[in-house]
Every structure is written in C-alpha cells, then in structure tokens.
Length: 72
Image 1 (cartoon, rainbow, N blue to C red):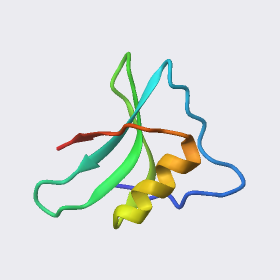
Image 2: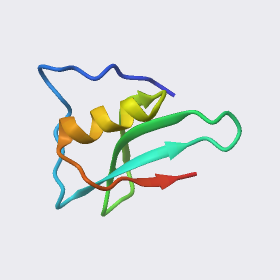
Image 3: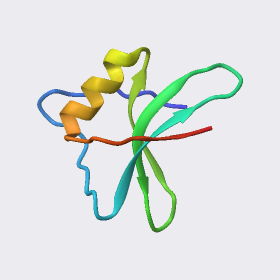
Image 4: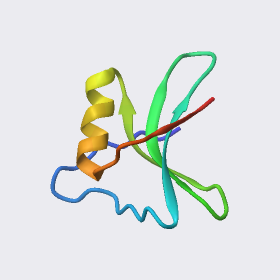
C-alpha cells in the first residue's frame, strides 16, 4: 500500500457529489488511511495516514468534511 503525504499547497481534489470520505481501517494491524471512495465504482484514493485523532481533524478541516465513514 502506497502512502502519500498530504500537501498543504496542492490537496487531492474532492467532489462530494461523486466521492465520499472514508477511513479504511486494517483489522490486523490497526492502521488507518483516510481518503475518498468513488460512489459509482468503489475506487479508493488514499490521501493520508491517520495516526491519531488530530490527523482525523486535520483531514476534516482540509476538505471541509463533517462526517467520515469507517470501513474495515
């Protein structure tokens, strides 16, 4: 799994009509990755690694998101 560092100057584009914010959680390792899942085909675009609650808040603030779905 490739990890991306979120850029302050050029964030990955997010279209709330076509994508939904998702945190993918590994059952085995507990690793969490925030990103966007395409509503039509289910393709997941990784945006950032989540290490703690502060990272989740940073992701929400950057993309102006209020709700994030968790998937295991």
